[in-house]
Image 1 (tube, one colour):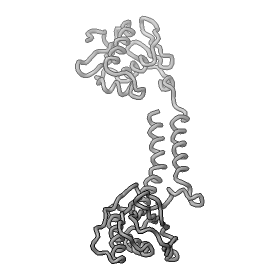
Image 2 (image 1 turned 45 degrees about the vertical axis):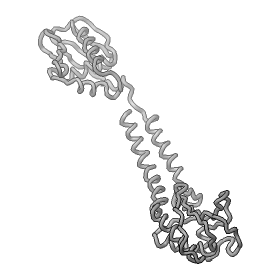
Image 3 (image 1 turned 180 degrees about the horizontal axis):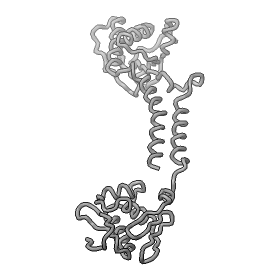
Amino acid sequence: MNGILRLGVMLLLVLVLPVIVRGQSTQTDSIRPEQVNLALRKMADGLLRQSGDEESRIAAVEQTAPMVWRVRMDQPFAYEALPGLLQQALDRHGITAPYEVAVRRCADDVIDLGYHQLDWLQDSLVPCSGRVFSEECHFIEVTFLATGPEQDDPTGPFPWWLWLLLGGGLATGLIFLWPGKSPREELAHDHLTVGGSALDLAGQTLTSPAGRQHLTYREAKLLAFFARHPDQVLQRDEILQQVWADEGVLVGRSLDMFVSRLRKKLAGDPTVSIVAVHGVGYRLETGRSQTTQS
């Protein structure tokens, strides 16, 4: 099941991550805060100079949201000159993302004027051009618009959120619907010889000179591991990893408890013993009488 889980997660990342990265890159590739700051200051300077003001201080540019910047204009300015000066400043600093402009009153944040970039690019005219507006303090607010698949254009290619749903559903299906093996099926249908005894994995029974004894699932699995590595020193970590790691249970002293159980069930067979190797692990000794155990 761990392998299936990893496969599902990897598949989800393969399907979804490129879409997310693509969406993020299309929003931010051409928008660097320091460049926007310089561009808006350049625009504000141009507006002040056109109105004959070459001395007033230009207020600091503020970023009020991830894609929204604004600059405060305490002095009156010519609204008709705004679109051209802003577009020139953005071009100068390499900012190509589409945008909207709103001229808001400082006192109550109400929009007095505004336009979309396309209004200017298509016919060099903007809404409300030529109209009189109050000479009080205003914020010139520029909102950059996302481009690419994250706009969810219904006439365009597959929306990114559908890729997300499909990828997540497929990964979930792989994890939960893939036919896996039950713990009982993981035991091979064969018999192992343990000294003078026989281990039936399918039936989880141990037949020794003392008779037949039933084993629990984990007892059978542990004894089978010992039987496949007779007369070899097996480290504790190796035993835990091979026998229990895929089940996420039992460590340390629990291993000692299961070894103790197996020793008792093998006590009737003088040709086999499980010996503790101090500080290392255990060894299944075969072919001689059970002697010292620690």
